Image 1 (tube, rainbow, N blue to C red):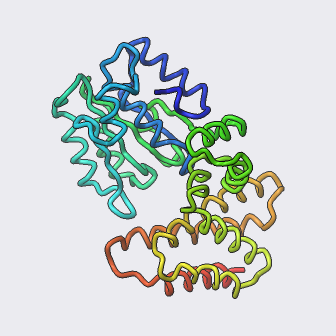
Image 2 (image 1 turned 180 degrees about the horizontal axis):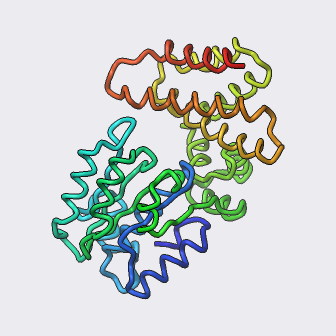
Image 3 (image 1 turned 90 degrees about the horizontal axis):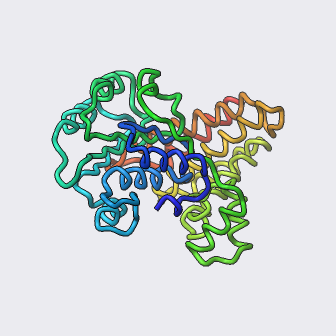
Length: 311
């Protein structure tokens, strides 16, 4: 099952070592950008924890199949409630951790988007992380482990997921999709080597979001407010598309910030920082209104105004 995970040789060797030694850590942090394979790795770790095969995680038994399909009773996934991890959710995780496994020798709790866990919530979680039951395994997923308290990080094994090299990424996507190599290479270029994003582009679900994010960047460079407004208003009736666009814009701004730090940026660091903050704030605002009325037109118009009024 580990062999199906693209690249990241050091991570795979570490996991194999944990399994072989019989000293499986009680807590992991998986950090990396969206689409890098963090959730896939989390499922592999969960399967490794509960699979009863001698070659765990075997990837072929009933247990591994259930974990892959999110159907195993001892593997639970928790996510933020809107913009943050509510402390009530953390208390639920903490209380549930002491309940014995239903099927096997271990239980696994996967916590998504732990970047959104504030300090009080992290401190509440720390109580069970410090002295967890022997059968409990926690897997925390985030973009950057530094967003977590030092006391949390010190009690976890941190695995940093990297994009695989180009040849391995092409081979992985080719086997998964059967798409022509030229299309795969273009998708990988547009996603900066991120396999998850490349797969979205090839399936058509992310192409528009990627194009729009690049268009906003071009408009910012040219100080073309009208073009930027037209771009964001194209998502007026597509809330999911608007959310995807904001995610792509945030990732693009993060990469540009790295370039700026190296003196290679196309726009100033102050502009990139403002763009990143606005993208993050707008994305949080949209997610906070899940299931509630929200005017994409007003939200996107306000976003463009905030970007250009500060230039």
